[in-house]
Image (cartoon, rainbow, N blue to C red):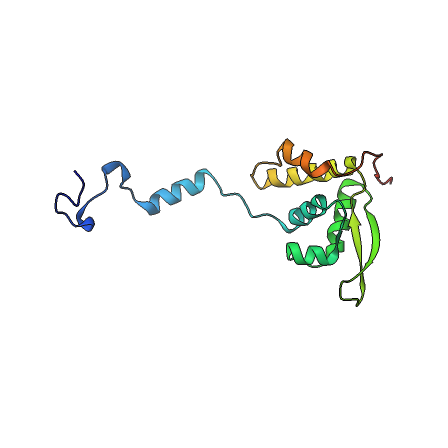
Length: 152
């Protein structure tokens, strides 16, 4: 029989003993056992945008889609971190005032390296890395060519 058929007010019905607990104590104990994953980092968002746009991204694209300024800093950072060279194309702004570079990954080898870096960043945040299917989908548009790694 349900509580209402017994003539009880829902406020008078108690949860089963197994469902009753001290929520504060439970929250504290689970907080120490497993930490929640941290939010996506700015760098990870910028790298993922760069990887997901085979035609390249401008500094304004990074600003608009990732809510980040200084898009050129993220492009330079991925180059330094992975030792690759992005293609830079001078592109006018849509409003006709000023210009920005369009940054583009040039080949599949470099795209794989960027995907691997994103996977490492996700692992540090304690979230699953990009699946092999996601990586394949992201790198397929890039041409097979020699790597554009920089030499020091």
